Image (cartoon, rainbow, N blue to C red):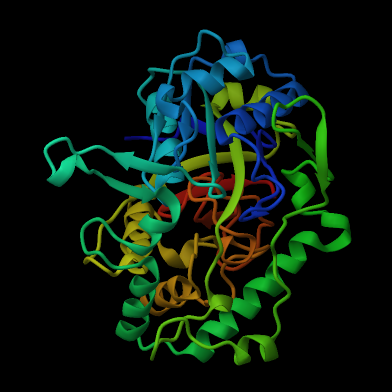
Length: 397
């Protein structure tokens, strides 16, 4: 599938601050909150919601009446006659919503898509599944967020165990993970420097947190909530979570709440909507991969290679690499396999530092560098909502 005609208008992407588990966003319905934020952003961009001919919504954790999927938040935004669908695939949700929107435009089915991904890990649903023919008619129940993070449906293992398996395979030590975690914290510092100058490109700060009924203001966030001060000394003191393990609470992400969104459209329309038409953000390739059971952090290695192959470029041509990294192990394994500099990845921060609301992640707005970029400037990794295995090409910045 050729993606040459698919672009993200420069400036037409957004993110809320991400808030820690049970923090300042815990009282907000994830779908309604995502619609609330998108509606305000579209008004700022002066984009009529009715001009979207498709919408894709990504979410992993059930919310009240989420059964009805994307048409509900689309209606709340004002896209009252825009068809859409909802996708859910845990950490891959963001990649899938972007791909689905891009595919519709590339195939000529749609011309302008609204892509949103939102999640709330806080106050996860407790679900009961009846079993009328079971012993005594008793069914099964689960706390959707915490139980599934600890119990894989196929292998029964926890997500943490997958990180330890990859650490053992690639001979990754605790000390290496601590060093990468500290570096990621330092990189995040660049994003919040000078009054959050970098984050202000895609985030409205200070951010007004609405009340649960979206009538009035509940509180105000000055930025991401739940980012922990990280020092070499502090990381060294932390013990691995699992006996004889290497991963500590300092080298893994934390559950969070928040949402992101963007406009996806044709090249011609993107020029009209861009806040700076001299800068173009094109989608170039996608890739997906599945690895051995219990080795989840390895998947971005092969998925990214497939995305590069789709785009027709090599890893040596890439100027900036962004990754979703629930564990520092992810980045170290990727660097081991590809030969890239692990300390150069993830400029301006990553999910290891600001938290993991599952489906959404940060917009891919990065300064172009000179490391093999060529005249156009290129980066690989997440655009808003994309968890890995994507390639985008930016011109002018």
